[in-house]
Image (cartoon, rainbow, N blue to C red; front, top):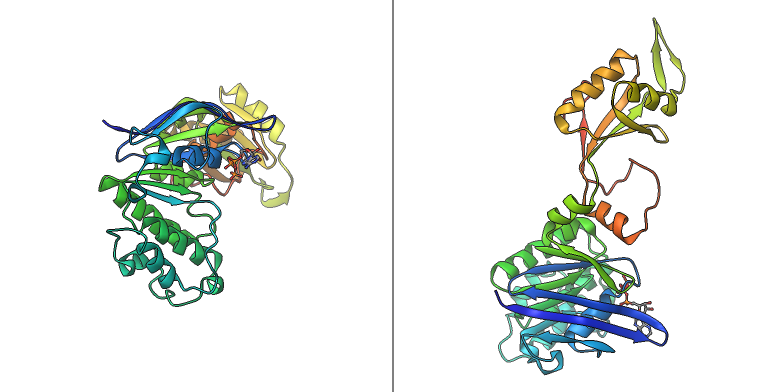
Amino acid sequence: MTDVLVADGVEKRYGDADALDGVSLSVQAGEVFALIGPNGAGKTTLVRALTGTTTPTAGSVTTFGEDPTAVARERLGVLPQDFSPPGRLTGRELVEYYAGLYEDPIDPEEVLSTVGLAEDADTWYEKLSGGQQRRVCLGAALVNDPELLFLDEPTTGIDPAGRRTVAERVRALAAAGTTVFLTTHDMDEAQRLADRVGLLSDGELVAVGPPRELVRQHGGDARLYVELDAEQADGEAAVASTPDPEAVATDLAEDGIAATPTRRGVEITGIDPTEIGRAVEAMEARGIAYSSLTWREPTLEDVYMELAGEEEGGAGGDAAVRSRAVAPGGEPR
Ligand SMILES: Nc1ncnc2c1ncn2[C@@H]1O[C@H](COP(=O)(O)OP(=O)(O)OP(=O)(O)O)[C@@H](O)[C@H]1O
């Protein structure tokens, strides 16, 4: 395996602040590497160090085995986080312009259709939506068919269908041998797209590995979320009452089920999917009525929350989580 990118003890200081504090990593040919981390963690600074637009205060960087500033521009594609081309040029004109800067570019029409802009290619850049503008910029970064592609938050502002298009394109490029280094705040995108993920926090790389491995190491347990039914059955008529999550958790603990109270129910940990039925039976035996059960596997977002120390909000109810609804009765549906 060939290391395309190597960072060794990279530090970058701005005044008294360390944007990067000793980052070491290597990325191999054909790999998709996603860098995640909170705002201000140093992601863009690391991209800039790797592309040679900023010089590390200490440590070293090599790209294709040489100083990044010495790498032929044909070999690199860079989509910066902020990229504002002239507003009175169309998407087609811009992609054609960038194609003209390279010796052997991809056909601009092919690039426009790859980024999903064929239909709006003749609209002025400033009249495109934010997501369409981002597609033009992505096209400009792809037009030289680079061996190494840096994408700094490529899908910010792009709608879900567009994200899928970008993901498919990135995967196809990697399959054809292009190395891709991207930054993203979209944990789902990083988890689905990247061969390896690096989590940068306060200028330090706190975890690196295949997403599944990071989730296994740092994601915590799977959980069964139980939303208690406010309308508890009481003999013939249903009466409005609010079951007490604390009391339910205590009851379940007596049955050997680890449950912690949440705002609208309880969160059960320490069971695997085959034991959902046992939890359901315990609740039914105790007359605990519930309105929904949700099984949730840990995700990269949990890794991020665990290691970047930014946990917010309570359990359950997170729209970004990958969860499976479970029908009352215990079977996943
Ligand atoms: N040119 C600069 N001059 C001074 N400080 C800078 C400069 N560039 C970045 N910084 C600082 O370095 C730190 C890291 O910034 P950077 O842009 O690399 O973070 P990031 O992880 O890309 O953040 P975001 O997710 O918000 O894009 C921040 O504290 C930022 O203010």
